[in-house]
Length: 429
Image (tube, rainbow, N blue to C red; front, top):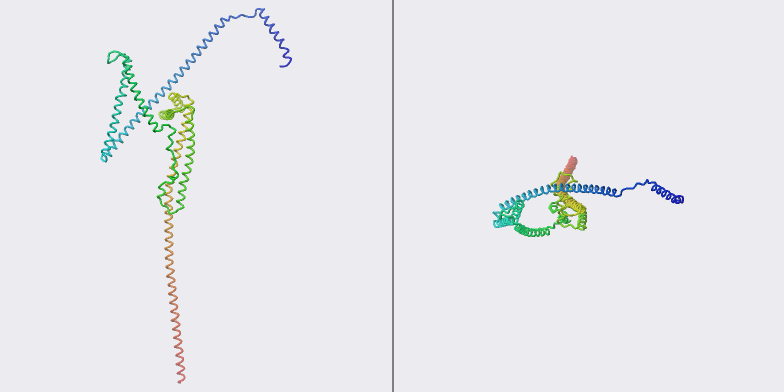
């Protein structure tokens, strides 16, 4: 701020003060009733509070209505799931009965003692289940019906009056019995979970590549091939595909190990039951709602997981995404292993064809060599015959020449003798 402005400030203050005094002296200032203003302000505050309460009520009603709608959808899904499970259980029991019946029919004539022991085992199991139903399940349902009847009518059909103490004793007895049975079943369940290792992130140990010593199938050594170079080439291909798929599955295994460590080291601890819940619920909802929109289905899954696990939405989303990634990597490992076996079987089939072609070529080559050898033998024989004929001709010519020379000498001797005889005759004459 410059010096001129600082000099004008006192002047403005004096002017404002003068104007205020003139207004007060002239009576132009109007006095207000502050009590009325306070009442009006309070009235507006009350109206605002009522509006806010109405908005909260509407919001609460909307949340409750939405919650009831979600519960109805959940109830429908769980009812369908219960029906599907009952149907699956019945089908499994029917299949089990048929297999047992077939087993009994097949082995009845082989080992009757063993078959009878199996029958007694299943009969005892059926008796135990029936006794459990009669001793535990049926009394609970009977008490439930009895209590429902008493609550509706207030009349005890046995004693003629409603004895609350008797009802309480019956309820306590059934509770104690059901708690004992529940503890025993829970103990059996925990034992089975320990034996089966129920953590869903530990179910990938069966996806393992075979050792390199099993890279070449045993069948490959039972097939004969006359060409060693072809055998070496095929065996190298078996080792190459094993090395390639082994590297691929090891990469995915490292990723899987990192995801498992991430799940186990999460700040929010998760037990095996909670992890299995996160795995099973999306599968069940997707199976029972195939035509539902993805966003609606995901919101239903997130809501039921929050209700069942009592976790925050962020924790549920984190563990769900981690388990989804785990399952994706695990499925990819299964695909890699399946591709390896498929590729190896294809190579085994091609090996049989290649070996057959090599054997055929070798046979053709062997046949060609035999033909050439036979032809050479025939040629040698013909050549020997020709040579023999040539020798015979040479000997015959020599004999003819000697005969001709002998004949010529005889002819010369005759001429000489004739000349001598003629000369002798001339001398006599």
